[in-house]
Image 1 (cartoon, rainbow, N blue to C red):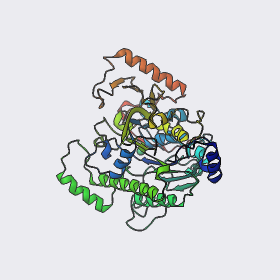
Image 2: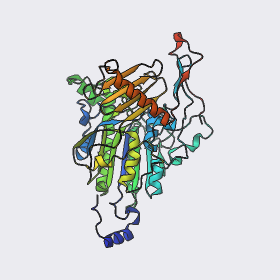
Image 3: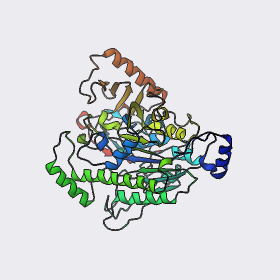
Image 4: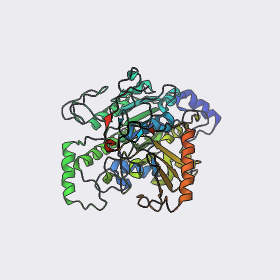
Length: 482
Ligand SMILES: [Ca+2]
């Protein structure tokens, strides 16, 4: 990061030379590299405790920046969590509350509300706000925010939502081409490469090419949304072989998932991060570039949750607590850790503030800038709770949740059943205190319900075709949604 510009004359001089970079009286506007990993478990990264998986580049990034201990995804599944990052709004407020296209249980006790399968164009998304301010914006990887089958389907690619460039982004929630993670990818907006090419490497090639093409003097947002670690589990053969061998002699002290293919996927992710970071150094812009790495929801196995309870699609911590690493050169203290509760909606206002741009509270309605945490001005945010609303069936039954300080209350919509946990003393959510602390449970429940009203959350309704004997039957939800 360049030094603060102190004198008026130097502001004028520098503004003349590199106008787009400088907001008067502010630091140089940083570039942003936002690395969003799919289905990233709390236990998947070395610096978050994994002993089986190897992530030296991500660990080094963390050692140079700040590591969050209570960072959350805004939803237990993909699309809503991604929408929350891009809009700064809770999925409940967006009415985009399930993965696209979700599924239905026509005989379940409750009916799912008529939720949205797209982002509203009326909203100014994070990339649009940065683009308005002169940033170059590029998207790589998994998008999963398009209304399958709807008439306006093709108006919802990343390039219709603020990105100048889109490589690989489409309606897919996972690699769906003939070779899946291997060429031929059969993926819209990505060339097929040559036999043996691996998707993570291929997308990294494109991201590095984009970095090479960036112009000095114009800041950029590189939004790399990895398809990995979503299934199907596929890994470069040499990495699979490496972890097959490692698993044979591994003392599995933390009950990790010793799947050689998943471990290979994690290493290829880490190699990708390493290549992007090395390119920033090579181009001489590492000191002007903020790097953020986090995930969209938990891993797909309980053994990837690092001791937290459950995993993707559930209502407990393993589903939504995410690794989150932020390196803001010249601002974050190296190897620092922050345990304040943060959530996906916070990135939008954070990046605006880092860029010296005004906050847009009419847009990122549920986000709080993390800048005071990152630059060391404070250890606390001015916010008293975070919330989840999932009016859908998945591995979990439909639920809502609130976390206030160390306490988390979960309300299950079918039965009204409550679960109350103290996450400081009981991070694995083993001991439900709802009966032991009824006053606290009721107070948090009122607060959760008030919040739902405040964001106009769509609620479930009694299902007239409920059949207890067939309540778990599933069909894919292919309805068009507007
Ligand atoms: Ca996901």
